[in-house]
Length: 312
Ligand code: RRO
Image (spheres, rainbow, N blue to C red):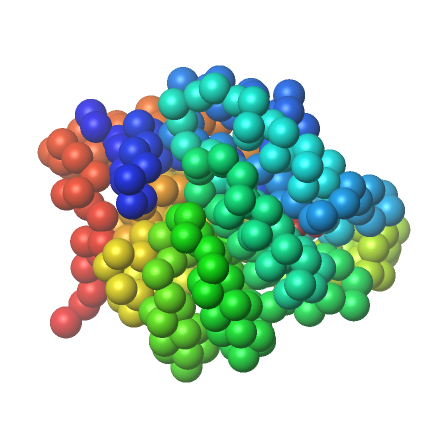
């Protein structure tokens, strides 16, 4: 079974990879994702210009019964130069996504200039949707700011650039964000980041489960699958066909991967379940996906991608 995908000139031998933030902060973790036989690529932890420790602990919590996760990591990362050194030294046939999340437009533009000038030949993911830095709203919910940063970026940036988006919840917001994104030669759109500012309560102690922001944090895992699928589907329907879609959110089984592809995803990322299960999740998910495709008599993902049926 061929489980492959392409974004511009980049070929992916497998469609699964980590979601930014999970198993990708250190070179050891990045190496582990690249070394898995079942990943098609790796994405780095979103970088800021300088190293950041992130928010105080506890800042990550797994809900009971595999429902999902809440996090308020607060962008802990080793700093832009660390990831630049990593990708520059790395010899791998797998594409690398270099994720950046500056705390201001200027920080993002500065990092994009550095990426433009470097001999890094992978893809770049501009994270417009971190929900967890106190005092910093998610750019992806500010349509004017989103258009502004993309206008400034594409004035000079020539490498394959995509954006990581927050989830949208209203049809008019799908329409509006797609209209903006379609103005730019984006290589891909990654949807969704965690659902921002959820709240989880410990029933024994009546206390929030994470410390930052009085317990508010980004929700991932099974709880967000329906929202993730809706965003993949809505954006696939609205975006130019040359903008590829990375589906992220709620992937814990091969069926979840299949559903993302049905909605139009080209690649599928695993966040919470990778954190919970570890690197072997990729093998399990690919095997479960292959079983579903075989049972249905499909030979390629092209038979499935975007083929979601609706009730007439
Ligand atoms: O580091 C984080 O708190 C974080 C980031 Br940058 C993000 O984009 N999404 C998320 O759930 N957590």
